[in-house]
Amino acid sequence: MARDRNLAATTRLPTEVQACERATRVMLNLWFAAFAVLLSCALVFITRYFQRCVRVPAHYHALGVCRDVDGDALRTAFYALTKRHAGTQEHVRMQEAFQVLVQAEARARYDTEQSQPGQGSWDSSFWAVVTSVSATLGLGHHFGGNGLSSVDAVLRDLQPFVHEAANHTGSGRALARSLFDALARSETFRTAFWQRQPLLLKRLGPMPWLRSMCVDWAGLQALFQTHEDIEVVQFDEAVSNGSARSWTGSRKVSTADVTTLMRSSTMFINYVWAIAPQAVAINEAIIEAFGLPSNTNLYVTNPGLRFDSVPHSDGQDVFIFQCEGRKHWRVWTPPKLMPTWHQRGKDGDEIDPDRLGPPILDTVLEPYEAMYLPLGFVHATDTALAHVGYAGGAGRGAHSLHLTVGAETTSAGLTTAAFLMCLLTGAGFGFPAVMDRFLGLVERDIDFRKPLPFGGLLQPPSAAATVAATVTPGGSAAEAVEALTARTVELLRRLAAELDPGFVFEFWRQLPLDRIEFSAQKQFDFYIEYLDTQRSIFRRVQGRTPHLSIVDRQKLYEKSLTPVRARFEEFC
Image 1 (cartoon, rainbow, N blue to C red):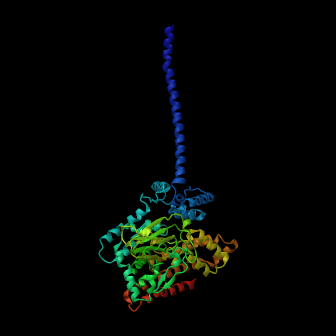
Image 2: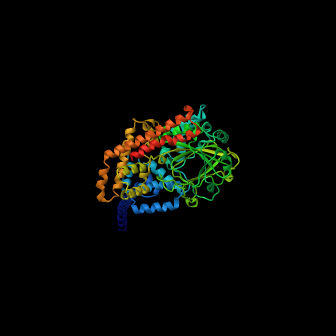
Image 3: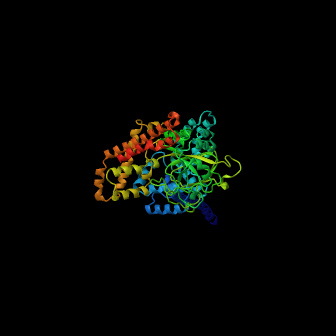
């Protein structure tokens, strides 16, 4: 009997084990199912988070916000970041990002543009994260989608020019054109540097071919002895001795007094191509490659001057070419990106360098080295021995002479704000009800401050090599006028939204589309005439009209361009 019971128990055991195993498998399956559900939910959450907050276009990344951020949170983020990043290159990108994202319509357009095929790829998101980490760690580089810093990327784009210069045996004229052609073709320069951050072209090494376009101290002294009527301007001595923080007292001086006066301040010569026609090759290269007006000044400073210039900004983008000696440069971010109406640190306006924070660039230029400086970026210079008296290198102990070559937009009136001002005034809207709101938009909406959509730097990279089609009648002239018309209509629509609703009908009645198109064509005609007039001036000063004296050449520029400006102002 006991044996039978044991046999029955033994028979039931496998059945109970199987049931237990089945229950275990069911539980495991349930656990796996639950885990799979949780994992799926987590992946959905992570994916959505990446889409909202990581895999975002550049403007959102610059401010560290998600795509669905509201206006109040956006302002809070921007102001908090401003406190931490004021005086850094990141702050320049933040200014541009904020002024786009804070406006609902501009933000919607930006989101639409960035959602096009090829935008927002995982690769770009990855490098956005790398950029964020590098900025957090203070590495100070801005990365592009290929993993190169923007500086390395633009230097890579300039390598064909570097190879050409290394093997070139002719004059510097061809190399000047090659340099600016390479910059115009570089998408990185056009999108990351132009009017956004300085570029140390000295990283390419000295450019000895500049010698043929430069002016040295011995040559300048010889010119002073034979041409006493050269117009030379002396910087305010109060600036040079450190007692003033703004330029207010610059004055013309006699060439006979230059050597003595240079002991206490810097001298400069406007329109330097008037005394050194060879320098005009750089201006011609900018006109043809960038499609922008250009002019050159020469600055001469004794070594050992503690204050060559106060912190100030200029109304044009400039390329600095050091011809002789050394000069120390400090550059800060602009108080406002792409300023339109005024230059800082001049005519009584003062900039306190202590409030600017540390400079984003602190460097010394030696002979035949170069640098690009965007408009609006605050900068100061000196030849203090503590900065330029180091051993080694070139130019130690010599007078500092450098060319400042401008690429003009704001200073030539080639900005959207200037064109809109002309259009509104011509339509009879120069009174405060319209003008106050327009000027307010200029200050807070970066689209109003951008340069006109003319010239090689504002064309797609594929077109940059054929700028002639953009800056001469015909070719893409119709496209340029169409682009300006479309931009004008959009910005006028933003202005109309600021006006009293009862006035909007009259506003548009006075600004019909045909009037806008006609004005855009006039603006383009003025732009073309401005460039052609400069070309004519530069041809005349290069020995083709030898009867012109140096003082006549110095006066030729304004004498030729004044009627061009007057005709357009009369139209306005």
